[in-house]
Length: 196
Image 1 (cartoon, rainbow, N blue to C red):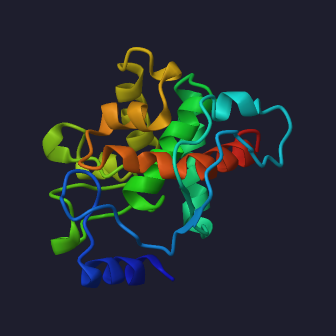
Image 2 (image 1 turned 60 degrees about the horizontal axis):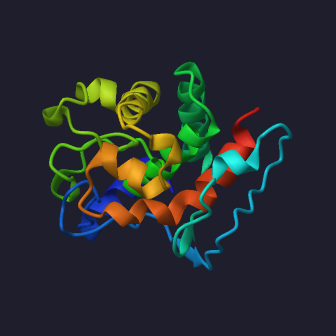
């Protein structure tokens, strides 16, 4: 499904984003829930990724998973590249990818009309009116990831927090626990693409 069609579907469905609207998180794709296990099982096609760093606390709650298209995979790679450029490790990338999975399903979303959460844009549904940057900056994957990571670095002890707590502290979502459902898929993606 192309980006315009996805945006149209989102607009017609009247879905709200998890960045503060009471309507709930988006479901732009068919998310599949899988049983959560307290042990991290990370599927990694690349060696050299320490799976203990990816999910140090184990997954929290029921996990969701979506199939990704080429655009979404490119956005995962952009998030990983920006994380490395910021000097942060794989865990920061997992938190970033999981946050983007929740906020936009890894789609670099522009303004969606009535379905838009205020003026939220991009991979992380950041708001120009909240000081995240200009619309052009926020819809640049490297910039938006770097802005998210800058916020994460300001959270004391983020490295030792469960993913949902670290993401929520930066994002201030109306649905703070929703990030947890993406931890396993985010870890799998970071494990797969960190060394590519």
